[in-house]
Image 1 (cartoon, rainbow, N blue to C red):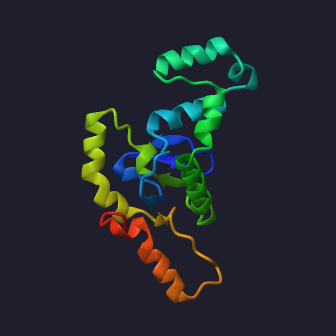
Image 2: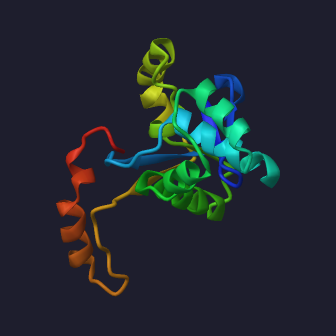
Image 3: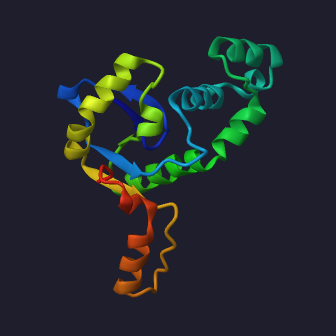
Length: 168
């Protein structure tokens, strides 16, 4: 199982028998999700010393190796997409709950590998069941902290997330 460190947003792979406490994100997908390859490139670019991040030849080599058109501008734009912000915000909540690891289906599964994708699909139920916390991200719900319980329930019912049977 590939997890994200909630402080660094770096990936680490764990065997099922040695899984740490982790949170899992329950959400609906939008148009700006960040996949595994994009997340990995963001991690690599952010870990580079400044002089390498500004080296066009090095970035061109990374782009050729990844098959993506990358640049620091690409990393900046990708890091500002709603999908990346969702991951970063969930990581902050995970940290507040004193949980060091996070699983997000959009970026923790390398979907280009049919073997990994099938394993993830087959493991989804136990992964959700064994998580220390499940964080629901309702990107279409506007919750007012001063709203009544009824207002909260009404807003929750209108959320796209509630229409998905597999989300929690």
